[in-house]
Amino acid sequence: MRQIGRFGVAIACLTALSSPALSEGDASRGEASYRPCAACHMIGEGAINRVGPHLDGLMGRPVGGLSDYRYSDTLVNAGANGVTWTEDNLDRFLADPQGYYRGTRMVFRGITDAQTRADLVAYIVQEAGSYDSAAAPSTGEVPPEIAAVLAIEGDFAYGEYLSSECTACHANQSGGDIPGIAGLAPSTFIHALMSYKIGEREHQVMTMLVNRLGDEEIAALAAYFATVE
Image 1 (cartoon, helix red, strand yellow):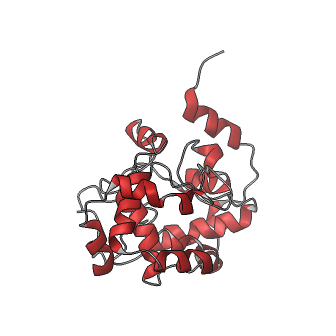
Image 2: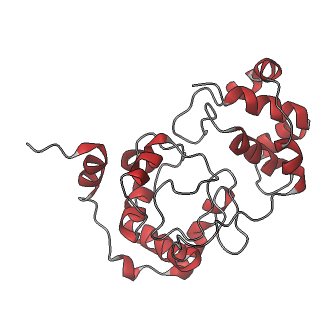
């Protein structure tokens, strides 16, 4: 039997999913489905990378293709092999992120309803637009509160000392409702925590915990968890 490789297997396994024609997706309905996504992925004018990469210019962009965002090796390798985002593979990825690109850091169980996915894809296509390889990447401005923490050189040892409160819930999670934090790039970790502190994301427990941390402590935790596997 001809060997089709890891990415080929992922695609082949998901071709059996029943999905309405993506052209049947309703972008107005998809906007409502996108709201939970917006906690991690900005889209539209001025979008920047936060917990997840921004989605501007997504269609036709190489998978794992933003130079200023740290992706999982799985996505980087896919882009290096010439895979770009299309409506079809975006639909399949949204159906089962971990199944389609095993090892992705995106903690999301997927959307089983095919029509909901078609609507969401229609909205993303409408708002994200197409990739322009000649255009400068959209980076936007980092909020000053986050920029201040990014400028701090985190103390690894201090971060290790503080880490137990984080690992009580985020102990090497690779799926489910609690995201894994091991191996996150410091910038990604800092953006994630600070988004609660400045009100961009809302979660009662996380907001309470993060508000107890100072800038030095957040930078230290980021330095520590970047080294954890």
